Image 1: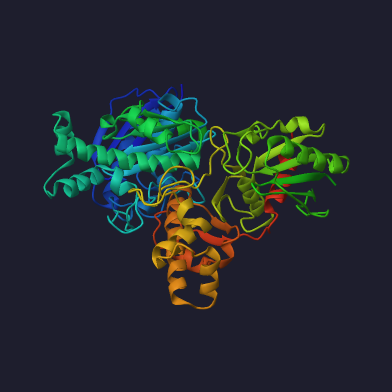
Image 2: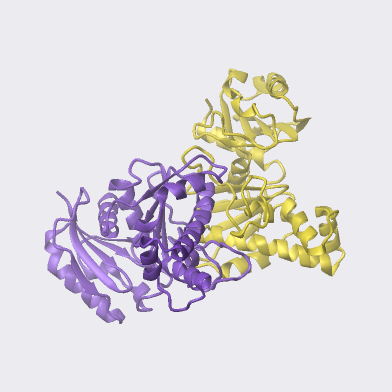
Length: 292
Length: 292
């Protein structure tokens, strides 16, 4: 059976594992801190690849940053990793075929192949983590756009400049629906700068009304964003993934979204492909598309 | 050369013309008021078809309302036409092949085939008329969604319920970027309920500062909406069509959009396929896809 060495590259951690054609992880999962410099990152990639390449058919990267339509390299810059990282020549790291895709797109593909959006024609995945990621699949294709940068969840929730977004613009979905957004909502509503996302989640678990109000306000922002996505894409389903997805109420969200859209009713699911969906999706895409 | 009888069905007018494979209108353009009742609309279709069907190979409808993925009928309801209209059995109107597509999608296709977005891989068309229409083309396919209803320009510009949208929800792009939106913006800014869209356009032409401020505020809403669309779709271009598109400044819009997006720079163009783009697009799609 064909096997891939999948490497997940995030701003703080690099993971790797060997994955088979069924999307099953068939090795230990290794974890490394993401080094600060370009040359150290490259060295980490080389070490991982040297260790495993003889046992696999293709190397599949799931990476932060937008990836070009040739699945060979990074487009533009990425926020929280060495600024030269987009210049990485992935093909030069090994003699094996190499395949690269954006991590949110990889995770969306894993959901589509073996997870919550299996057998759908149009799905929108929204990752609720420190930031917000997006992966949109339309008729068996990831929505990539002209240069591979599509699926960015930076559309406005307000038009009067209330919150500066991490992207430099104002009031994007990301700065409301993310963990950072939840913290800001809590700060604003409770007038307390020292509050954390954890405080809110913990407060909700303990039935503390003030935290429940904060959480519901944050969830309502998510609903307002998903209404726009549902009207634009008329998706079979919206999949919520990421560390904060476990806390939202998908029934409430689905009902609220469907009560306000002009398109046909959609489903709202939590992701089911697990924490390593990025690596799994990268491997499954690499098997399907081949490497460079 | 293959020819289509194209029929454009709007809430107030029905147009028809014969169109060849180059997207050229090769007959007189006929115009009828849209009748109030389902049976009168059906009768109008039958009369038009009877008159022209012997001279064409296919009947191509460009219609208000969402059209299913089989291009055979309407999905759900449409606002401003007889409420039974979605039940129209288009195939029963003639023995010729029949093809049906949503009017905004048809117009976007005409722009893509012979107009402003020719030779692009990803384009977003936004029609600025009484309402706002949308047609999105990705890799030679219209974005249709699970049931054909995708491309609706109902994503929120605010999340705190300022303007009720015609769709029943609040603060959609449509209720800001449309002609109706321009009128409401003028009413709000000038504190005058009797002002019309025409007054604003006319005031701008006469260099009246108060109208210029209203217009710029409205154009800024358009910019804010297009930023979200550019981040979601990473399009080669955004095409602005419809009766109000002629008044906007595409250079200003393009520059403002590109200064705030995280995706790659996009172009903003005015539509060039003309007032009958809907009929032309319907015909070109019918030639390509065939009828039922």
